[in-house]
Amino acid sequence: MSWKKKSITYTVNGTKSKETGDLNVRQELSGYLIYLISCALHDITPDKKIVEAVDLEALYNLSSAHSLTSIVCIALEKADAFSSVDWEISKKWTEARNKAIRKNILLDAERKQIFLQMDKLGIWHMPLKGSILKELYPKYGARQMADNDILFDASRRADVKSIMVERGYKVSSYGKGHHDVYEKPPIYNYEMHTALFDTTHRKVWRNYYNNIEKRLLSDGDGSCGYHFTDEDFYIFLIAHGCKHFDGGGTGLRSLLDCYVYVQKKGNALNWKYIEEELQKLDIAEFEMKTRTLAIKLFSSPILPENMELTEPDQEFLSAFIDSGTYGTMENQVKNSMNQLRAEGKKTDTGIKIQYCLRRLFPDMEWYESNVPFCSRHKWTIPFYIVFRIMRGVLFSTRRICAELRVVRGLKGNMESRDN
Image 1 (cartoon, rainbow, N blue to C red):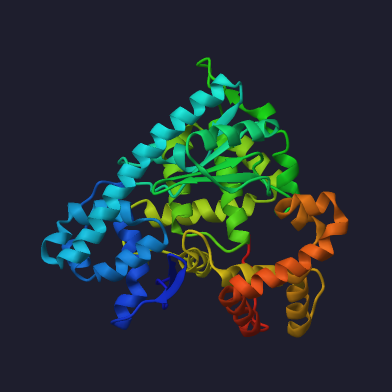
Image 2 (image 1 turned 90 degrees about the vertical axis):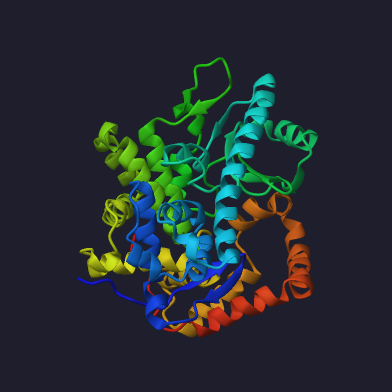
């Protein structure tokens, strides 16, 4: 079956954009992106004719939306693609690649210092996701990092806050949900996790990863560092990807992470154990679809239009392409409304009304994750609701209007993305 061509909508720096220019180039842009990633993975020089057919500025925007500019730049440099394009376009690509390398170096060095301080205070800790995955990519900096995620002893939250403040970090979020956010411009952004999932996520995931520290392995170097087994790392990688897929969506980098991990670790993994644990988490089908599609896309450098992609493959791939790295508001709203439909709400109007009511008057689980003070002192909730509405009107009018436009525009053709 041939690649289903479609117009691509993507998000860059929080702004939703659409490709312009020749229709065929616009429709095939995601295919070029996948092809160039495969070339970089396998250290193959891209076909000159394919590279010449690509609008490099449009490709840059799409790559940025998926946090893939660095790995695509590797392929373009190998093809000498920048020798015949405008200097400003070439500069965008090379600066993005250099920035990715520099950021990885600085985040690695800073994380080491943070861990040393946590070791001194006897706080167990474990790096998550990207800081591990990036070591498996073919070249340093090929896997871009927006932030660093670290899991640590939840009982030492205040001590970790002191460490970060002493190191000059601004506390962007603390005591809300399952992670705290610390930032130090222009590079450093750390999400310090007390748990892997919270009350806003599937209950089966929360239960499975409750007291996860009991299942971790010590780094064995005298530090307080811990790590997953390779199998458990992969299981969490899939669960984390499914969490985002369920919400606002997740981009092509999630498929790429899956492919890279399986290629590097797959032959040594205990797949029987993995399959059993995926069944417990109710994500076995999602994992199979993700891994199958990732292998089809990245095993060899060919354009998707020449791949044997089934109709379900194409629909699943479209969900990743349309989401970008951090998902979209439209996906978030659509998935929430589909959940209401699954709960028994039948009419579009009824679903939309219920969605708006839940946004205005969240359930107690939302308060537990986002406003713990209110969950502990329930008498404050009415006052917080008034405050939240006023704050939204004063400071988030544009975002609220955009969300309402999405709600109003969704019709009966909403469909839950199959896991």
